Length: 69
Image (tube, rainbow, N blue to C red; front, side, top):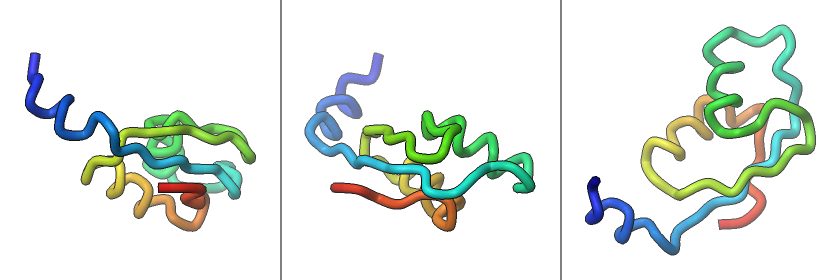
């Protein structure tokens, strides 16, 4: 168990809302939405703000919007 990583990002979260559909998108973009806990338009997910999460958001930036930081 890596306690250093969990305490470092404990208070930092980001809310993301899906605004675009996953149909007719590349398979990797659909899988990225599933990884972000989004798979329907309008769904909101609160995620830990890490560089990996930011990279996933950047990959599907045309399908999601950041609601709050």
